[in-house]
Each structure stands twice: as structure tokens, then as C-alpha cells.
Image 1 (spheres, rainbow, N blue to C red):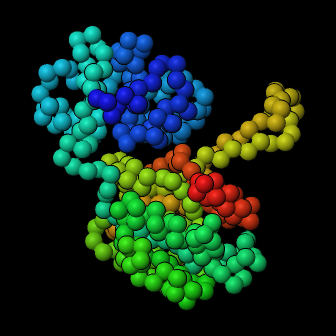
Image 2 (spheres, rainbow, N blue to C red; image 1 turned 90 degrees about the vertical axis):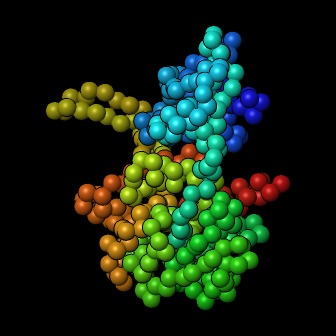
Image 3 (spheres, rainbow, N blue to C red; image 1 turned 60 degrees about the vertical axis):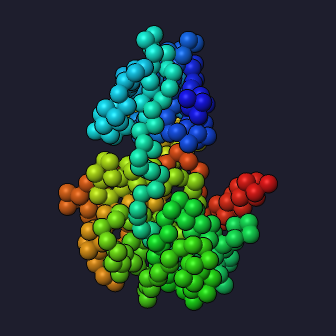
Length: 350
């Protein structure tokens, strides 16, 4: 029980408070209790991501996102029966209550006899772009080899995947590919197994996938090699598998403020005026999970963008889902992004 005490919050907590709890604890559940430790509800990582998709604010109270009727066990419950029921419902943690509904323990179903933190998958890093928006930094160095702190950004990305048990990595290269080979090699020094796809011509953000042959029926994570993130890829893969998604796109909420008063009219009559409203959108985060059979749908040696590929898949009836990212994420597309990444990794290393 002691390992779960830090997972408790009161009903006065906000969504932001719950996110801090989920990020700090190995157990990816937050137990919401009253002043007497009586169970009010639970919040999981999936609940938070659904809240983001539904436009919830992080300042809202926990009650707006928590599940108020979670599966529970009682003192003396047969553990094997609880584990079986939990797995049928794809649950990882079960609060155990006494006869006054106080939480006295939490049954960890996810680690009862299986480790869900590591799900087999392959990785493809798309690293063939010119990096023209970062010119002249990329005049002599391909963007993935630009240093963030003391390491090329692609080394940071590779080490992050390896630390999470994802070691089979393919890198799509084009611009200054010889420098990529010389720097990364076969991946042995990272504990990875690196292969390469060569683009003779620029093929967009998805065209190189037409050269890729999956090594089995594992899902494949595809990621742009200029994206830095702290996402736990196990959460992404479990979501993809449990939701029976065939193609999953990571998305990020993007807000911007219109610097003027926006006037709403009907037949020249002013209905309402909103002063400098904030617009909210979900944008493509450059991280995807694809089932292995989808690569046969990519035409070989033909320019293709990932957005067009997803539109094509959706049109063909392929199940395409969105996975909202709430963790650190940065797409290094502009010089300002490059400076921001430098600051972030400098602060983290101190």
C-alpha cells in the first residue's frame, strides 16, 4: 500500500494536480478520496488524454475527469478472480476497500505476471529532410545531427527509445546521409540495431515508408527525427493495441490568440463581439504508430506526405485514431525552436 500513498488526491485537486501525480509515480493511476480516505473515483492516463480531446482545462476540478464508479475489491476478495475480471475489462489497478469504503490497498494487476511497460515494436526515424528553415545551421550539417547540449538531437532520440526497450530502429536518410552513417553506424554503441532507408530524391514525410519491410507483425512507431519528447512510448503502444487502432497519430493542442476583436454577424447585424479570442486546435505532432500491413499501401519511390497518407487510410476504411500528447514535446522546425531545445536540455542537465 505504501507505494500507492503518493497516488492519492483529495476532491479539491485540479486536473493539473492529477497530472503531476501521474507523472511522478510508476503506478499510472490517481485515487481520489475524501478526508476520511473514502473512495470518490479514479483517474488514469487515458482519462486525462480523453479530457484533452474534449477540450477540458487543466484548471478544472478533478471531479470533471475522474471515473466515479471504478471497479473495486473488498478486504478478503479472491485475488485471482479480481485479476481475471480486471484483465477482461483492460484495467491495470483495482482499489481495495474496507467495509466503510476506505481505500486500504491497490491491487496492481499490470504487474501480477506480465510487464506492460515494454511492448514490442519497431521504430522508423524520418531523417531525410533538408532542414532549410534552419539554414545556415544545416548548410554543412543535417538537422538531426545538430547538437542539443552536448549531443546530436538524433542521438537523444535514439537513446530515449533504447531506454524504453525499443531497439530495432530504421532511419530514413537523404541529405548528407554519409554523415549520418559515420555518426550513428549500426547503433551498437547505443544498444540499438540500426538499419537505413535511402531516399535518392525528397519523398515528403511518408514516401520513404514505401521502401520499408517490417520484420514481423509488430506495430511500427514512425517519428520525425526533429521531434523531442518525454512521452512514454509504452502508453502510446498500449493505446494503439487496446483500442484496436490500425494507424494512430499523436496530436498536440495548439492555442493562439487573435489580436483583434472578432465580430459575429448575421445579415449585417452584429450578434456578438469577442475581444481577442483564443482559438484551440489539435495539430499533428509528427509521431505515429502503424500496423505492419499498412506499409504495403505506400507507393514505392513516390512523394507522399503523412497527412495525405492518413487521409487515404481513413478514406479506405482503416481505423485511424488520435493520441493526445500532454508531455514535453518540441518540433524543431524554426531557429526559435532550436534555441528553446537548448535551454530545456541545459536546465534539465543542471
